[in-house]
Image 1 (cartoon, one colour):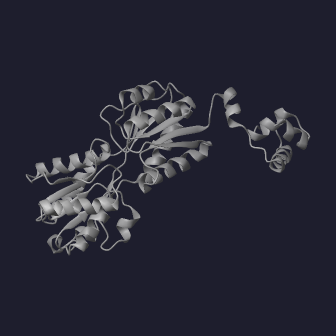
Image 2 (cartoon, rainbow, N blue to C red):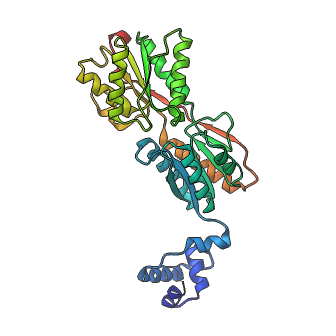
Length: 336
């Protein structure tokens, strides 16, 4: 900062004020300082600035996977929503592992974020305690936990899954299976399976056609392999509800390899409204959880809490209503 001050012919304090857009620095002086900083390649030390302001300027976020388009869209919505207040996102991914989430939350909190956003509402006991005692806004997303820590921006995965079952039954299909992942690691996937079972049983239908595809996130290959196991055990299956669109795409390709017409012989439905589910042939019926909106609404909640002060927060729920996207993979003459 002293180098920039000498280059611009001003004091270091004036340089500091210029970078903070202080009203006491006129436009001409600020322009000269910024040009000098640009020539010298100077970048302001935000950590040093944070020591006096007690503000770090970032929000910590944990997501299960960095190569999942759904979570990427949520982070995009969060990032864009926070930009208006100059807040940045510090990202960590848990690989669908609660112990890893606990480790990441501990590390992230040592950096004094101004808020933290976590995916899901199920945590280890230690992780929950850290979040409860963090003294900053905590936003749980993609879920509706029974006992929220602070604020929620999410939806019921169980109810979303039930929507698909209702649609399939309306087309005349009753022998329906669920294809999912390791329920012990993917709590949202488990909720989707739970919603499937509950809806099937409420209609008096067999809810035991459950196939575990492997550890999350389920790949297309694992979806295909799971479909093969499903048809080996229950060859009369009329429809499959898949935990994600990637699993559904894999299952559909296995149907094509076996000569099973989709949707004529078997219907396939997914979850997540991935691009691949819309452009494949036939397009796959899916649930759109409105991932970007989840991130954007989480950002708005954080901004409100930070603006109103640390003692103003009360537990709140911002519910997002997923949309059922009915496409050709579940339509047939039965539904006409």
